[in-house]
Image (cartoon, rainbow, N blue to C red; front, side, top):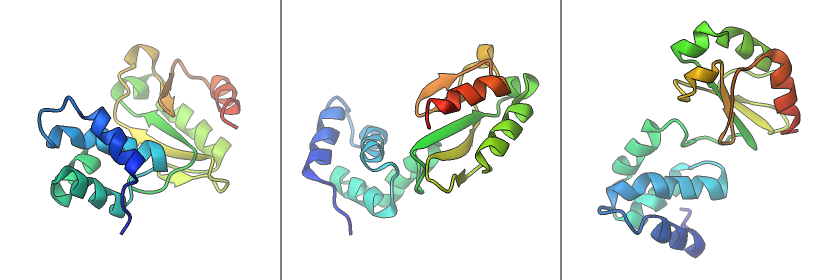
Length: 156
């Protein structure tokens, strides 16, 4: 079983010090593990549960609820494509078709070179910029196929 490094444990303690309960520390702990490893494996999830003195089920419940906690390996850059009503109205389908053709992958897939993973997200909270995507935490809105090509060049 994989254990958490002392460095990760220390970062979790610092990042969750203000949490009044161990349960409220789960999301922060998972985000720390994911930042270090790119995703949260079953072994790492169990190690977080052990470190926080919680059950695996408690930690897994949080990990599976939040769609930005990755439970499978992902590419170096994760593209979240907003499929909210606003984005649908403003051209989500055309944007998705363009991205999938450009990268040669569909939702839930990673490019063969491991550079990009494409995932849907229900809402990015950017309706005024629809259609929108988020790459590695950076929001990109008011998208067109040409704008997407320019954005993707910055990640290649």
